[in-house]
Length: 210
Image (cartoon, rainbow, N blue to C red):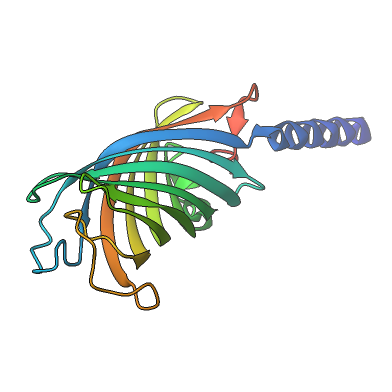
């Protein structure tokens, strides 16, 4: 009788573990926010109090509960404290790491809170109403705390630092005096608020399958 009991207990444990392994790995993320350039916005210099409109959409695929890839498209519009608006479009690819699992934040809060960190790079375009356009590169690092609303949807706030490379147009839309062999570099600090939605039919997803 005791052997039968332990056999049933083992089968139940294995079944539950296999069920837990079936979790959603694909996420869609969308948000809006603002950002502040941390460098000169014009040839004359200028403060770093410039704000802008920011929108971003992303797809994230988690290879495991901790590691995944994050692909994003973002649009920024610089309009404040400059004469003409400048638009920035970026396509980025980043490594995403579930730091909340490592520090057991998800486990200690029952999966309600979590923390993702991400880093990578991308390419894009900076253009202005002066008809100037420039191909730029970017290196990005950021942190994304989130709170679960239900089993599929979470609300996030993302704080990211962007280093802009190969920049030949200032944020006020004017061309820089730098040559193509010695381009301007700048940086931005962005804050995005939005939602994460897990795609799939499983009860759990990678962010909560701790």
